[in-house]
Length: 611
Image (cartoon, rainbow, N blue to C red):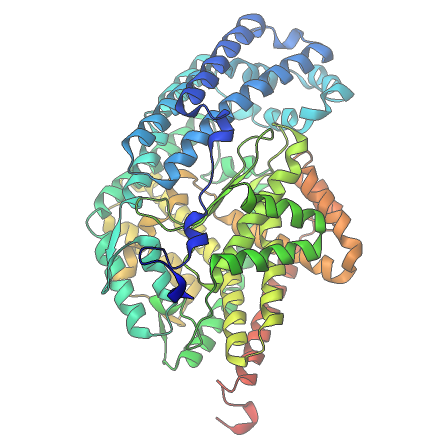
């Protein structure tokens, strides 16, 4: 195909053209539209505060409905402006204009948030006998669950003056440090043998079937992480201390309590999840031992873990990836297929790898009156096809739930991965079905089990690192670079056991993970979501076509109900103590399938051969 390209045309022209169009967020008005929306939002916020501050407890249901709809309009204006600035910054974190706009938006958002702070504080402070009759009124259905969630924070809220100070100072505190970390990591470039490349490109080489390529990439990544390591350690230490102060002031009993409350998950259920996964770490070790056999090495090194187990990994153009993913979604549900096609046709995706572009992949929900946006760093690997399916799953969830409005479009993090993992699993099944080559099928199965291990076991191990870091920072003071490296190694060694050798260089690899900085406690939600999604997919296998309508109802419900109620839509009982073990058993069965595939491909000796 390359022979048909013009001399300067990219190897994958559709990929290079797949850049999102953000102007609809601000009606084509660019930066002026951002500032205009924030100006309107600020004026409306001041007007609402002047009329209602100090009087929320006096509102009847019709007046509260009117106030909530007015607040929703403000959140829409701010959401459009904020999404425009954040998404522009994501694709070029080095552009001074994008940086300045994002900072200006964040400052204005904080000002508006502070102006409206009165409502959440006064609403949470209402006695139950006053609030409950209001919550039961049918006119408040569009925001009922949101209002109930706000009241769950009652014991953790400070006085209004104190909350105002914290809100205003946050911009020059935690959010500023988080932005610096993003800019710092986005600027990291790795000196590879053939070129100087962004960190994401270098990390993708850890999937190479050639061990020396993997070793070289890992060493180059460690070298690239070294110059800014002490700066990132300082950023992490500062944010660890900042959260410790917040938790103390707000009377949270431990470092993860605020995240659990946000996720609408009890401390007990989260503890049960973490303990159940840690108790099954042997599943991950069993896979890594099998992989060592497949790769012909006595023991894996940490930089071997993502290696392709076949000599030739399948590659996809972006057009091929689009076709596979859209066909899978359409086959499951024509409605979802049509909706997914709009992401490509209407430029809701930004896919190429570029200098200074934020690494990884994500889907931004924006606001219900607009549409979601998907960011990828597509490198033509088969796993990039699955990443596309994953992020589109998020996008479809947001788009389907838009009807719930600004208050209920998004779910707690613990349910946020359901649609993404479900969609990824459907596409995985299609790729496996279409692949008749035993070696290639083994490679695909290997990617699948590795994905499950990375999402369930590795995320819990990373949660363990966070727990150690937050706890020791509070007990012992600032943690040195060396100590952070020791804690990282300790948490990873607990998972890996004797199945993987942890190299000296790997001690610094905690330092590019953005979730530790901007979203403390976030990562366990991946494990929660993965195990939940596997259970949901199992229900689909049991019910077939009869499941589709239930699934669409789940997506359309967004976050309008508590997680337990949402789970019941698709027949999943989140309150069942055995729920986690059931999901983990599904992961174990996938490992057994991979072991059988390894035998069938001839890569392992048959047990009967005595090898």
